[in-house]
Amino acid sequence: MVVHLSDELAWIEECYPIDDELGHKHVSVYVLGDEQLVLVDSGSFLHRTAIADQIETLAADATIAALVLSHSDYPHAANVRPFVEQGVELVASSGSPAQQGLPDATKCDIGGEMTIAGRRMSFIDPPLADRSHTTWIFDHGTKTLFTADGFGSRHQPGSCTATSRDLESGIPPAAIESFHRHELPWLRYVDPERLRMALAAILDEYETAWIAPCHGHPIAAEHVRDYLTALINGAEAIATERELSE
Amino acid sequence: MVAPTREIAPGIHWIAEPGPDRSHFIEDQYDRHPAWYDPADSLHVPQHAYLLDDEESLLFDTLSPACKPDIVETLTERLDDGLDYLVVSHPDVPHAGNAMAILEAFPDATLVAPAYGNAHALYHLDDAVHVAAGDTINLGALEVEFVEASFPDAPIHIWMRELTTETLFPVDWLGYPHRGVETMAFPAEFDTELTVDRLVQFHGRVLFWFQYVDVDAVTAEIDRLIQDFEPVIVAPGHGNPIREGATDVMARAKEVVAAVQRDGRVGTLG
Image 1 (tube, rainbow over the protein chains, first blue to last red):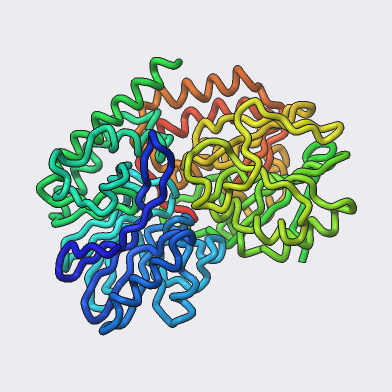
Image 2: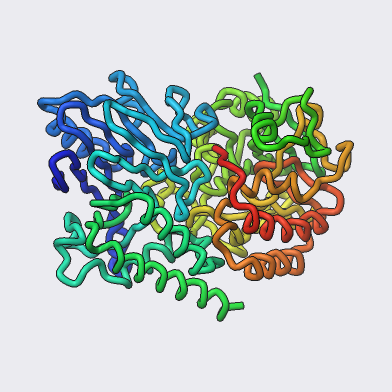
């Protein structure tokens, strides 16, 4: 389903049901622009047809100009090939595109900036990530921070297409903790204060209207502080459990 | 073209993909070159797969898609009776990106994947045989046991050890760059020692999250690994296999964590 977050930002919501306890995991694609579209990530092969159909609808009066990848992990990059074959420019942070299966990619540099289809985009070193070459992407036009595997949360059936604005009590802290416990296993060693400082520095530098994770509800600016508090509390719980198990 | 291979212990074959020249890792960062670096030589951060071959055969990881034909040809040339098990340590492209091609070439092989994590279908791993810590596969004179990954980047991840040779396969941990002249050489054959700053060149990129950890927690885990496994050989996914002083290098890696925390990440890889 397509959820329009703003005039130039659409969220293609797809998700994967894990189990009754853990709920669903979003596997999202975002689309920027109105006439010249820029895709952020390409989604999972499981949702290939649904994503292609929704992009085709969005692109009815527009051109798909570029696909920007946060990283080459399969749930983010599994549908790259059809776009490349259509002549869509592929932009990725990988310094080893052949080794990552992306030999056609134009490289973006983490810490740098590029103009892609007329959009100014910054590439940010992500404190919350799995792969080394992951980049967060900030679109200056819509003030959207695309956070790949960061800022995620689980969700229950019925709230699949909800943004933080649609959730009466906000994104449940337990859903935030559960996501991080299961998706970023290195957090078992985390120093929560170091993580908090790194995230706060990014949020201080980039004034965001939306945080757009691949694996969670989009987070509106007014809900970022609450999310961050829940995330750091969750990180403390994850690290404390590791200490207790030693 | 076949990939370069070398036997690291009876029946355990190291298969390497040196990858592109990474001299810029050093040239872009340092005014003075480290002792282990030679500006006249190339520098590589390799991908490694390991073939364990006795009565039955097992391949641990697949190399990257950049050398898909090479790994298939290498296996075809070496395996008269086909491949019995293909184990993917984790579904990262440079580790697992040739799994489909290998399974097409060896359709009788059993795909083995980590039991950890909970979205295997997103990686085509839902139909694999899932293994967790303590599970074993007997290959004849060789027997592997799976080990929970201590430093995983993502949840679907597993390490392995071979019990008779006491070889630990720690995947993304204990990687390091090697010079062109050191390709397919063991560290004991290098001109210089395997130093902390060389290990930092890998871990400060791939385990970038060392910046955000409690250093004591990570070093305690390294101590546990040394105590519990005490490997004779360490065979990383991105560093030449260490056949002498393996536990000394593991202990040295404790300094790496502190260095990455102190100095920040040195760059990216991948």
